[in-house]
Structures are given as structure tokens and as C-alpha cells.
Amino acid sequence: MGPIYSESLEDLDSLFAFGQSEFKYCWDKEALSDYFSDTSSIYTILVHELEVIGYCLCNYNKFSKEVHLYQICISKSHRLKGYGLEIFKRTLKQACNFESVFLEVEVDNIPALSFYEKNGFKKLNQIKAFYSDGADAFAMHCIDSKLAKLLNT
Image (cartoon, rainbow, N blue to C red; front, side):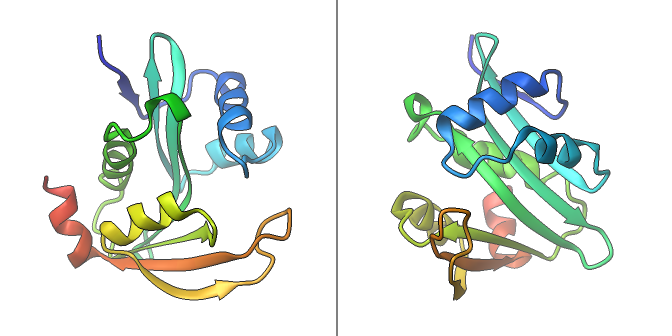
């Protein structure tokens, strides 16, 4: 049986443990709990054989019609299989009538930069010392017209 895409959180501890093991900049448990209690949060969790193997966490501002992609993470053993794109698309489809998506990505994260650029994102600027370890990030942006094609595939 293939992976299951879920839009509900059943086990914060499992998601937190997965994030800690797979994602360099995972939030602490309190921040993660706060995220899931926020009504503007949209997310998809990818589960395979009862184990979390990926997630996409976003915030949707229905007034500005903007989505902010906070984190997308797929386990190392499941990367390059299309799960990242699928989980991203499923999460964005939860935001009705959005007009743009913003995100920050570490400047040295070449696979992520390639993924975002391939899917229509453009770099806006570089943010110095954005991450807790002092690493810089690129702020990136994509408008809905670029994502419409992606979401309809």
C-alpha cells in the first residue's frame, strides 16, 4: 500500500520526532503545537506504514490571499519520488483563492532552491542570519498564475 496523505494531526509527538530527525530547522514542540492550534494553518502530513515520512506546513491569510510556506520535509529515504511536489500541491489546494506564496529557504539548500525555481518561484532577496545557526536565507515568491498550471497537473 502506498503512502497516505492526511490533513489532520493525530500524533504531535511522532511529527515532532520526525522533524527533529529529518529537518535541520525543525520547530520545537511548543511552536509546533501553537502552529496546529492556529486556524490559519494549512498542512498535509504524509504517512507510510504508520510512520510519518513527510509534511508540508503553511499559513493562509484569507484577507491578503497569501500563503506562507513554513516547512516542507520529506524523509531522506523517500526523496526524489515526487512526494515533495505532491504534498506541496495538496497543501496549497486547501487555500481557497490564494494569489501568492512566499517562503524562505537556506541559501545553501541547492535541492530545495532547484525545486522551488522549477515550480515558478523567484528569489526576492537574501536575508542575513535568518536561521538560528546564523545561516542566510533567500526570500522567494510565486504568484498564482505560475502555480495554477502546477496545481492542475
